[in-house]
Length: 292
Length: 292
Image (tube, rainbow over all chains, first blue to last red; front, side, top):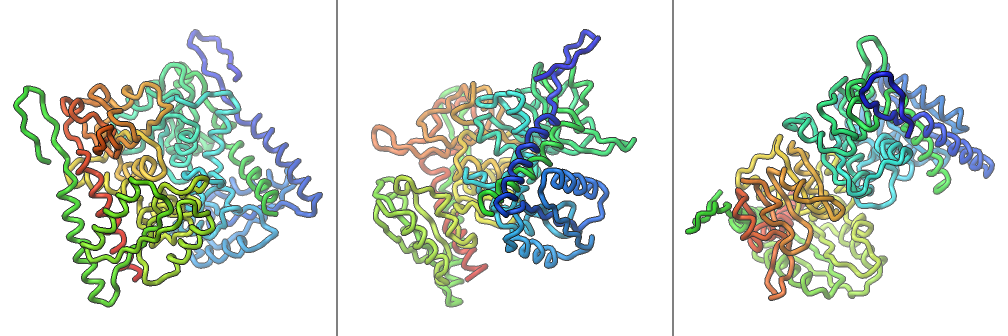
């Protein structure tokens, strides 16, 4: 854990950087991809996109670039932004049946009226490298082998990397999405934390979050969490990736304010984000090793 | 909500009885089963048993008797207590493929080394009336149609029956089993409660449980929860079904002690138990209606 220095008298929270960990994971991924290619099995990731959302486009280019640099072939399967459920379903089923493909990501957002969890059932669990198939979610809850959603896995990887203990400690997750909040809670529970899940209906959010040793925020609201929400010395993981009015990337945590009380904060950008991307590639290499 | 009267000065908690609700559900089930039989589709439940555990035997006889009284055919498929995973798996697959069977329960305990969640994957989700297949668990988390585990559903049904509000309130679940704790937390979360999950690694259990408006205890330890664990006026749901030294059924809650502080407590026996049995039958009739 590295501590930023400061010239004020306020204690400064440690910055729980994700870029170093992401680099480590990508190095492991590149070695694994090279080893697989050497066995005659080039590792291949397919990303199915049915949106013209700018943020999604940026993310897919970043994932595809990272894959390429790690020696993973990344096929971006671009469908129309108004593709119907049947088309997306058939695309996913085709990739699931294709022995040369080791990982499949269904990019969100999807066309109106199409639910990711229904379609993701077409992704066979061993290739479901972002844990979107309800069967992956259930196997995770059952403690059976499954790929967890990459963002949730990134939260845990970042906490482990910075040596944050979890067993017996109070972890509070703000946000209950199927892709982040719920699986992160599941993983924290597996690690023997006492876990609470807060959301928009929670009365007096600060009353709950102030009891957290580890606070994970995944809501999508800039500056939702301030110093008043945080216990002295708490570890704060900011999963938010919001676009600020000036076009920059902003988390859910008011980092400057929270830093006066927290023991550590993950930065945005440079925290959970790069680890998430690296873990999708890592899951893909594992899938190629196990099933390729 | 009915309040027990008392001659002492201590405030007495309401008894949140389950037998009345179970009776209502069974009446609905019997009507549904009769209606289905009238359409030429007799409702059929199969219970697969591979244990000589006494408690399990008692439970299966009780379920089978309740089914019979409601006009549901109940086949108890008795396998050897040392049946191997393959035998159990083939039995479940056969019942899944049998169009005359509408509900399948895999009774626990199972032979040593055999995991319920792995085998239950052989139960097709529409017949998985006790929500044991990891796919049912995942679909539940995703908000997709699925049978929840009957005990978890019973906790919610009992709270609803007694008019306990959940949205925005603090619910604490003690116990994190796949069959009770985790799915109960999931259902409470779906109902917009702020949900915390405690377990054996939780430090200072009372510190957590004392913040609960609704406290659900599903651990399997007689008298684990006492008055000191409970907020004034809280609602306490006791899922424990332990055998007391005198052979009687005992919950996880010290009811006499907790009644001096709680607003309401579910009794053991006569609380969650009868509602659970009734809901397995209810899920089976629903399955026959939807897929029979």
